[in-house]
Image (cartoon, rainbow, N blue to C red; front, top):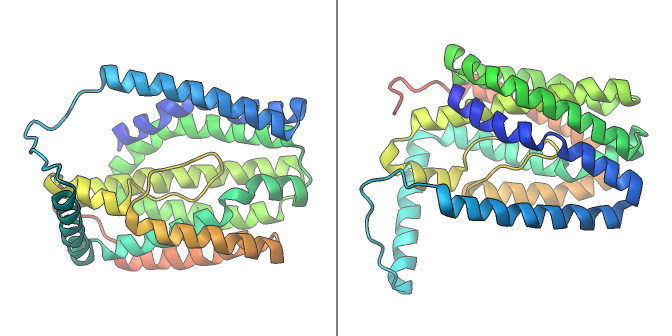
Length: 289
């Protein structure tokens, strides 16, 4: 848990000023020029990161099996492993998978609309929204270092439940927030609940999946659960892709009907997820290394 928290906090400390700069660029240059500047900066940083990975990353697996690069054989083996992974997930992690798919649907349903709702419904200036993202990012980066230790001490299940309990009223409160000073604490609490859920779900997966098949299983389930908080993107598996895509599609229609509905639905279904997690998800009796 501590290592996951540190791994989560370190890059966030570096990028914590990004939301503030984004809001500043929009306020200074307007939307389209600001987006062009942002994409150019992201492109340059991406090249630097790719070069660093090629130079410095080392392989962690000593027993590397050779791959038959014949396209037909490769395609056949990939689907064979997929079927085996699906059977293992159904027998061992189907409750976790159900919750993860629910959060994926809900997260993608609201992810594109944070800034729209903040500026249109809550009447915030883009610069103010950038400040909110900056502050919540600072809180996330600093507290992630402690949240990892909390997960180690209390266990992933309890911290996952706490993340739900923190997220439900915060989502509803953000929906009703009026002005900057009410939106700020609500979004900060949502961000922190997302950190609890993200780190707890990572630890839960690591404890529940044998190392020998961890890569294949996480290719289906992703590397953790997220709440769809603005500015946070996590790798997701192929089982999570369909509800995520469906959430993105449905979210647009729901937001068009009523901008408040996505957050109200989020609060309601997160309550369902909380109850289901309490009843169905339990810590592994024999955690894997």
